Image (cartoon, rainbow, N blue to C red; front, side, top):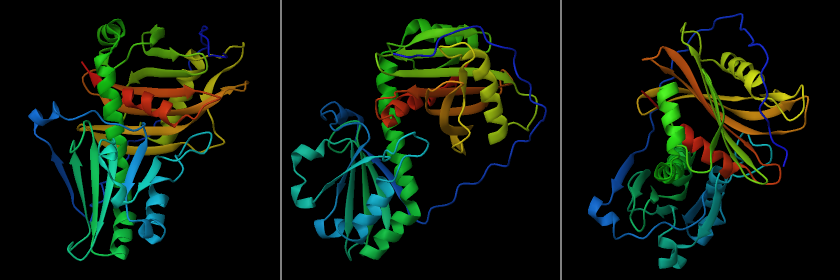
Length: 347
């Protein structure tokens, strides 16, 4: 398999401008209610494990509604193309099951959406339940008095549904990785770089210098990698797309060369990089999501990066995952490395 190989890097590029930290956008308040329920802790031990493949969503909806406006809205929402992938893939694999066919075999599915439409529901509402039939399971109940109200609810709050399912998928992956961490890598990251990530078995450290770490999982036809790099936090003028992409390209050119002399990883500029700001576990993050390319070469694939400030060390830290899988779909490979990024902690 063609893979990126380590070589000595070139001189570090310099950025000539300082940019300012933008005001954080306040989250838009949803017009509908999200309520979380969970089973009691002692019930978890008797629940079966979830079934279904990663990224699957089971939609329980009457056949006639599936074939008309409500079903079309669910398909538009949950089967839309995943952004920043080199080939078209849906964000989820949507499986429709009519209520009459929702038998016990389906109850243990990992992600279930129940659609309940009728006059007994006075207002549109989304209710979140966890671990009702299996663990770790998420169940999303979409309730509305009629079809048009249901469609309006999905258009208003559909992104929140996507967010909840994505977070559940990441939490499952991270939970599994936590059980199978490579202790040597965990110790190295903590002692040398003052941070931790859940790095599961199979990953090895390819490069470990003062402010850059490259950790990779190599398979015969795929590569999944985690990059960690950091630099001094000197100005509030840091978290913008241009600045972060510039820093990314700077570190990639220096530390991530390709298999042939003169080749190195860079950010693909033919496809716009997506930028997002959010708060997770009371910490601000800036996300970049896009495609990487091999400069002067022919390799490429998707990446996602999270950047934040480590106040204790007065540094900006970026953790990034990228995938090289030329023969395979990439959504779940990318979700796996992304799940590792969300386990970041500082010491």
